[in-house]
Image 1: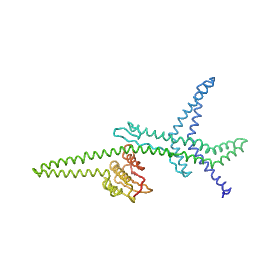
Image 2: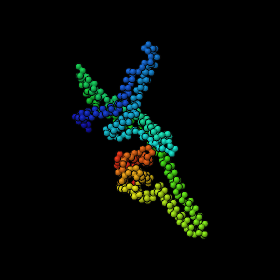
Image 3: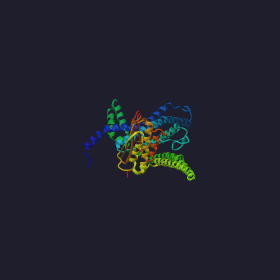
Image 4: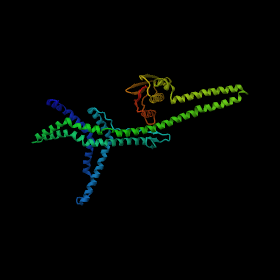
Length: 438
């Protein structure tokens, strides 16, 4: 059943104001780059030199005009490129917010991530693709890569929206502006009123072309999202390779310098005791006592080494009790609160445990705190651990820092690191990762 005509008219009248407002916003987010291109082209066309005189033959004149047009295009591309590189991401995010507000559809902005950089044992910096001599060079390289990746992703949206959504959205305002000019022009009052009426009539509908264009071309396409995820995983793999190599080196060094050396010394002591057991039993007993003490020390070192690989309390009793054990050994007063109902997946559990362990170690080393709170929670299928201290603050995930390492390791599980650390404190750091509970 069709609604009555009066209802349709009321809806149309009530849609004029919002329609003009939305058309103006669509014009703003889609017209900035075309406006710069048109203004630059017209401006540079006025000052472009002529490469042929007025009496030149036709073919030379055509070539000269082509050269002037090419020069104008190059000059125009410079401000357009500048706007795309520095204002394009902001316009992209603004359009995504408009799409979410008006269409009820969340569109992910096409912001490419900046690849993490890692300092290698050789002193070079690895950005996931190539090596650099300094951190500054590596950071500059990945930032420029991200900017140009953003530019490549913005171009289809800007080009399509500039020839579809922009002309339609600006029509009501153009009609109203032309109508206003005609109204004040003698003898054209009727034409002016007609133009204004046309502009108002189209206002509730002109912005709607923004919808299908935004849904198809705005934000990251599935292919670009896949490519971005592949690059993220490549960077994570490179970082995990270095982390695993460092961990193996730590284990090898711990075995070689600790337990292995003690076991060799203990074997030599037992051999000496064997020679002296008949001739000098007292000395042999003393040597055996020293060997027993060495065996106890070697066992303690092995336990400490194993605890760093996979703590028994974590395997046997789970994340919450393992974090409480960390709190008991901490040099700062630590309070642990948990609302986790059961154990999470083992790999995630270990990752969160070691992240909390490193955060507590950072507090002890750098924060000068007197009290720390660890909050473990599980909501919306996400396990989170928040470490809050009353220290000096100023913590950042700078390149090569412990926080940067935690962030990269959590990203391997699709997790995230959130830092709130103003100067003067307090510091609140949260690690969160999606998982299922057992």
